[in-house]
Length: 168
Image 1 (cartoon, helix red, strand yellow):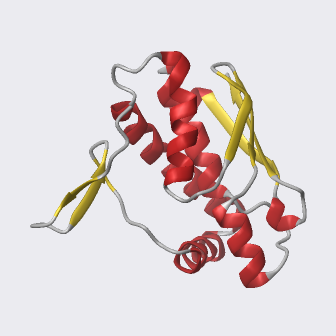
Image 2 (cartoon, one colour):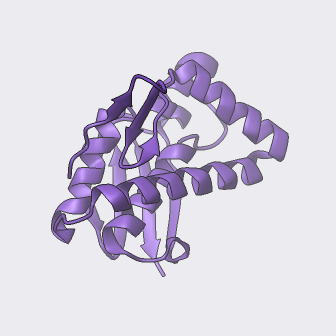
Image 3 (cartoon, helix red, strand yellow):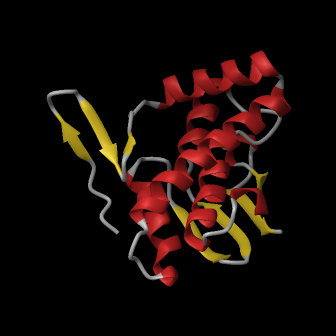
């Protein structure tokens, strides 16, 4: 997988796998996330953000995975997740049939806790969607077949964030 971003200086665009990238700090990302949650309600906000993250990850990773052996795809998705600054992922319990991703560190959990303290619920909506999209892209399964849920969050006081993925 070639995970090298390309910069078009004439248009001031950064792309990776045909998808445009924008880098933001935790301040921007968390304010955006909180605004969506407050505007739509926590459940609808979380669902929208997970869906958007999943679709963008699936599209980008599907392009990047072209020609790559299936058995290397999830590891590549983990490497890219950390290279983009979203955290370190332990994917030893994840396979093409689902499983668990442990976020050893999480951009959203660390940022949320440092800005606002302990939240009442899990906050790694982007990471949850990313891993659903990554599993869909790695397996070629339709996104609707992947169910992902963050069952433990470091922002809420857990040791690490845990995302469980199920293939239906």
